Length: 94
Image 1 (cartoon, one colour):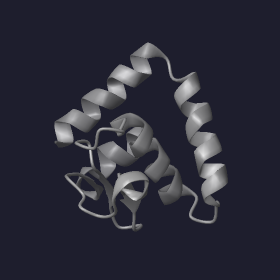
Image 2 (cartoon, rainbow, N blue to C red; image 1 turned 90 degrees about the vertical axis):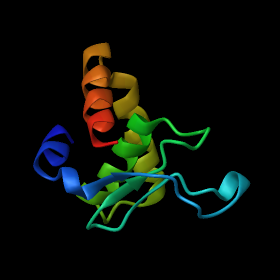
Image 3 (tube, rainbow, N blue to C red; image 1 turned 90 degrees about the horizontal axis):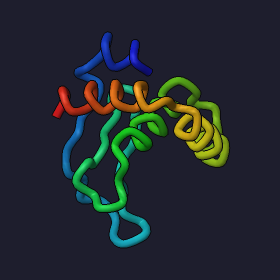
């Protein structure tokens, strides 16, 4: 994911998304040209959503259940240093 952010920063867009309501509120999506994340949503962890949408980018054939499982596994295994590095990369794009 670091490489994807470094080589394609224009593909990551962090902005308010006005799609859906309540539980159905969209906080991120990947259309395979860009990854869009709403960092302003109250339930949004920008790192988690960026990882989730990056998994869709890398593995478009995966079903949502697998993406969620892998996102959770990655988030649980990130070191504090890795997490800080990802946050820094994200906030440079804001």
